Length: 243
Image (cartoon, rainbow, N blue to C red):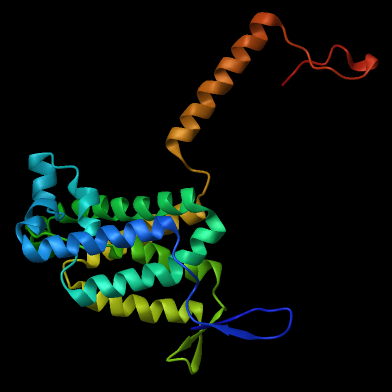
């Protein structure tokens, strides 16, 4: 529960609002696959993120499929509740397209970093290397970081009574998710935070977009040189070249 700003004073609202189609799809997919896991336990073995399988079996799909699997009812419930609580408002601010891009980039990026951490020459890395990591927590931690950065001082009412600034609330909730996810998943949680921070602090760094921009700029400059293009304007600046 949080206090929402109002021109008529303070008002109270429960939750961030209704679910969008995008959030319904994500939550529905997670719920469906959790049911499939219950009846077909082998699902975790096939779709979970096992770095060994990614590196030696070229099973790249695991970098994304692991996000839709969970270890328990508590695990999936807490993750999906957090997604609704904080993802709803971020989607309204960003728009559905960027929200989905952020969600899956942080989730898949967290999976990639998990694989890289598993290659380190340490004992804990060997355990990660052979073990299946599951859960949407990598993407969820990315959303928590984003919400804490966007609305650090917004009061969220814990147990409907105690007002806590959002930056502290997301830390508390992050600790709960960290505990619920288990020890092996810590690398994935960290990966989600790192990817989210990089995206939020460097919004213009998109390699594919940058490549397209450079190619388009090269084509424009080539056409200008070929046709000797000039800009329009006043009569006294007729010789000004387009830059």
